[in-house]
Length: 346
Image 1 (cartoon, helix red, strand yellow):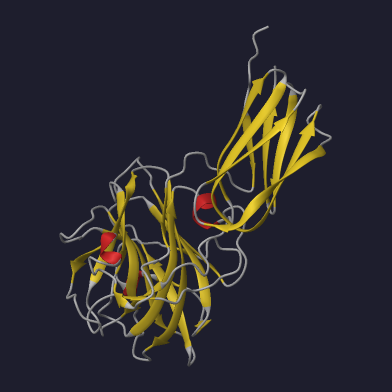
Image 2: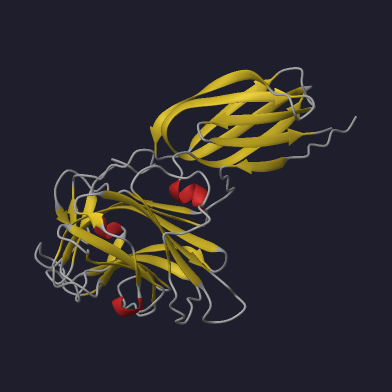
């Protein structure tokens, strides 16, 4: 009898198949250096503006990293210093070409100083439609900082493509707080100036699904990008500040940019009246493992096995499980805060 496998993927939390993800953990060795040094971070980051070559002008790679509980890129590699006014080098890292849907950039951020005179704000990270060593001019999803309402605090802001005067800003955050930031650029192909930009800012936790209410929504209606092709670090000129950026993850889904365990596939093959389940992850953090559950009716599930996870990982991991003598059933793969359902029918 010919067997037909029908695979239905149902997301509880977030699952994105074949998502493109760029991960930047600033893992460039044990010595502090300029980020764009060709022997160091310069393999990925290219200067497109300003002066480079010295610690007083360049973006600087630090060997220490930022930590945020539950984030896949927490405590991995090093970090980068981004300054306002004191240094001038700007650099970009190439991304896959995103031309539709949404693009998410998540990263860890700690700001420890902003001048009290910095009341308008300046941006220090953004997307662009080109990359490399040439001049970049179409800069979108601009992320700002400025002085807070009271001493020892700062605000962060967002504008689609304008200056601080048209940015929308957050409430105050205390200096030295490590934040998880997710910037979202959403394409709208019906016109040329109606793409949207959003920012989600967290001091703890990571929602398993994208929150319905962003922290910041830009009201700037400047022209759109035709593509997102690079992420850029900019050392500003309108505000004096020092920011630490770490753990950048850029993807076309919330799940692969922010979640602690990123599933990239979940598949099944029926062979000799047994079901071979396979799945893979792009990254994991604090992952004890996966419970495999089976159901005959799709309602009542029983646990039939356990596969150990890789705890903390930032590489592709592949897993498998064989369910003998079953070729028609409902299967469910469970991991902390994330559940993926797989239905197999004959």
